[in-house]
Length: 250
Length: 311
Image (tube, rainbow over all chains, first blue to last red; front, side, top):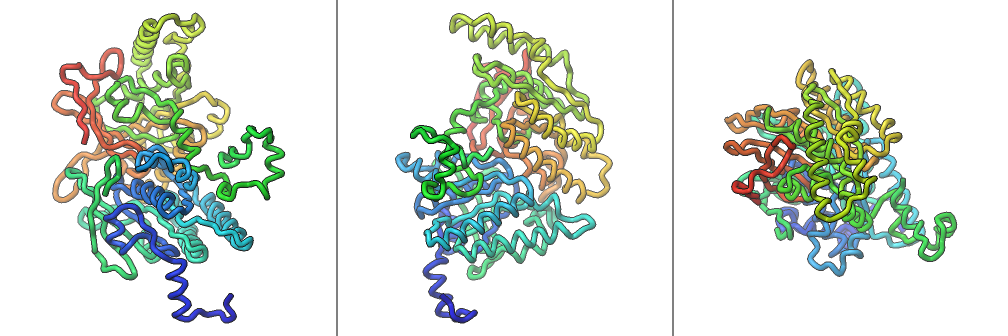
């Protein structure tokens, strides 16, 4: 394909327009702040305190991508929080249920080493498919949550945990870029200054995701707020609101 | 063990798993070759037949979506005296209601860190549970004699496997040991830890270390829940938390622990009525309901005050 090791701007633009489009999350509030949705080829992080709606956004996005984009979704679950019943309840039309639900794959992962294995296998698998010129339709990889795998190994005297965290980050970005997949990971929060909360995993993780979003939940009104912490083309601090209910109209 | 492979053991066309495996390269549906992954469709059919463990209180079961779910970690917390241990004992009994009576017919593991498990109370609850189940099924007609034999409070007590731990090292050790133990004792359907936080709230100078140990423990519990089709119930204490200039009550062990469970239920007093509130759940909405602790165990509150508030 490429005779030379570099790509010029026009080729990049072509690649972006052809392969790295935005995929809608199915949640209007989030699509608005992101100018369309999750971009293929990029790593998006969703941070927020417990019960702020991170898993719900993941489930909704998985359904939306499998249904409207006809793409396959891989859901790596570390907290047994994947609920196929909940996804089914969000479907508008039951007729397509089986077709849509068979496009969503779920795998439970409970330690960082398994995560490495799963991601490497996935990488290998996708490459083989591409060599055989089979059009693989995996467009979204969700990890809910990445932080629960990393927290047990981070800190302490040795820096192994830190380097594993960074390698997971690079592996995810590579997977996203080479196979045109949108990657969505969730992160929890820790207490910051003056009682506020900030995303966990510290400074070195901060520079890994392309996009960072922060979710919060108002306990009285049940209105969820989403704001941009980091993005390459959106003004920081841009925010929008949505609600979670049974039928998922946001 | 690999659910994704289950597709190929479909014998409807007379293909045995072995020959199906040989035919893989040509016949394998493209989408099923993510190693060991399961599609949401398969999971949905499993989820729909999955039985839940009743709490004994109908209102509470309703807001929980049928009761305590297997394969999930549920955290229940509240102020002292609200009935956490009572719920724990009730669940250890209810999980044993036999299949024929609509239960799971499983055993229970009870890990006690505070020493608050009262065996006389467990006997009392088991006796009431047996009576209730038998009186309900008596209305439907005949109960086979073999089934009746199973419904004995002594059998119920014998199937509660009790571990008493006195330090957090022991607690971690027991949880590590459980993986091997559960592989042999396949009947166990619920694991209750009462309380998960007690031993971790003292003797810790290094809070970062505590966070690491706790998050590792939570992953282990998640793994046990998933791989042994087990309901994990963690009872937790409360603590005061200072945010935005005021103190309020929240569950112990801090912010990062709040992500360690699949579901979270908070018990609180509403005047002199006990209430449960679902703070977090991936599958059911936030809601609250009342419950009461009676001599028989956990039950609905008296009908005249009965209300379910949907939030």
